[in-house]
Length: 341
Length: 204
Image 1 (spheres, rainbow over the protein chains, first blue to last red):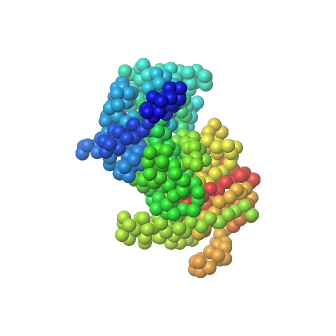
Image 2 (cartoon, each protein chain N blue to C red; image 1 turned 90 degrees about the vertical axis):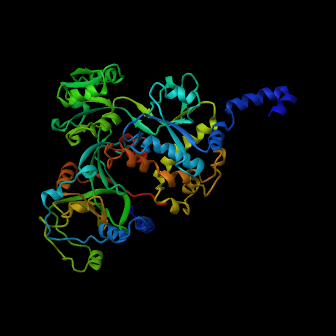
Image 3 (tube, chains in turn yellow, blue; image 1 turned 45 degrees about the vertical axis):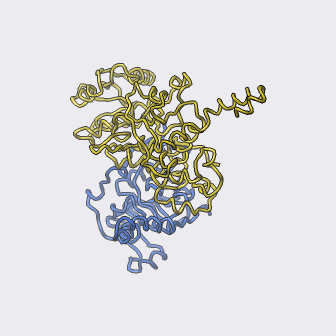
C-alpha cells in the first residue's frame, strides 16, 4: 500500500482512507494469534456470568463466550486469560488494549459508543429490570402490585424506571430506599418491603443465595431494556466481525439443532445452512482470518448458545433463570441471528 | 394431510452413543427411560408423584408469538406445552411426548373434548404390546387420565397420565401427556376448535 501511495498521490489518499475505514488491518487477531492467547475482560464476580472458584478457575456465561472465541481462533478453549474489571475501569481497559474483548454484562447504550472508541458486537443476553415478591403473595404480574412497598437501590436507574412504570400503569406504590444491594436485600428479607426490584439477572443471582429461594417469585415483567453483550475497540472491523459472528454462529447453531453433542453428525449434514455453519461449504472463515471450521470448533468446545445458557444460568442451575427473552425468536423469545450465507 | 411423521432415529442413536461414551450402562438406562416404559393400566399415582417440580411445573412464562391468545403450541424437543396468553405470556406445562419413531409435527384443531375418556389402544399399539387390554373404561388408573382432547382426525390426543414420572420424556405412541392437575387445568381453559401447533426438533 505504501509503495503505491508514493507513486500515485491521488489514489493514495483514497487508499489510506479505505485502509483506516477497514481498521488497522487484522491487527487485533494477529496480536492475539502471536501472543498465543486471548485476553478477556470479565466482571469481578457475578454468579452464573463470570466468577472465579477456589482453584482460580473461571466459569460463567460471559466466560464461556470468551472460551468459545478462543476455540474459534486456536481450536483450543483454554487459550484465554481472564481479567476481572470493575464497572468504572472496564471500558478504559479495552481502550488501553489491556484486553482484546470485554465480556462483562455491560449494557449496550448509545452513550457508550458515543466517543467512537468502543463498539458492542451484539447482544448475548437480554436483561431488564424485574420484580421479586414473596410467593405467598400469589402475584403473577407487576400490574398486580398495587399498594406495594418496593425496595430499590438509591442512585441507580432502577428507581426512576420503577416510578415511570408504576405511574404509567396507575399502580400505587411506596419506595423503600437502600444504599447498597446488601441493604435492599436485608430490607426485603426482614419485611420492610414486599417487592425487590433491580435487573432480573441480579434478582435471580440474589435469590439463589436466600435462605429459602423457593419462597420467592420473580415476575415475568421486564420494565427496562438492558441488552448485554461483548465489546471491542472500534478500530478493527475484522475483529469486530469475528466477535459478532461468533455470537450469531452460536445462536444459529441452536436454531439448526447443532450442539456439542451433534457437531460430528452436523459435519456430515446435507443441509446447505448446516454445511455453511460448520464450514463444509463456502469460505466463511476466510474473511474473519480463520479456518472455515471456526464455528464448528467453538460449538464443539463450548456448545451452542442454548447449551452455554443452560449450563451457566438456566433453570437447572442455582440461578434458575428461564430463557424468557433469551429464548430463540421462533420459540417465544427475541434472540434472532442473521444467517450465515 | 397436514401431519408429517418425523423420524429421528439417527439423532437418538447419536445421543445414546454419546451417553454411552461417558457412562457405561447408559444405553440400558436410556432405553428404559425413553423407549421401554410400558403402560400400567390400573395404576393410580400418589399425589406426591403427581406433583411436578422445577421447569415442568405448570407456570406462567414470558412468551412472544404471532399466534393469538388461546393457541396451544407444543414444543416437543423441550417437552413443553404452551397455552398462549395476552401480553407476551403463556401458561407452560411439562409434557411427555412421542418416543423415537412416533414423533410428528403439524397444525391441528381440537376436534373433541372428553372427560374420563375410555382407553382403546389402537391396533398398532396392541401389535407392539399384545398384553394390553382391548378396552378400559374411563376412571382413575386409566392411562388416558381424567381428560382428553382429540387432535383433528388423527389418532393423537392431549391427555392425562397415570405415569407422572414420564413427564419430560419421549415415551408415548405420539400422544402428548400431562399430569392430572395440568390436563384438568388445560381442559378448562380451551374449547373445541382451538388451534394446536406441534413442533419438533429440527433435523440436521
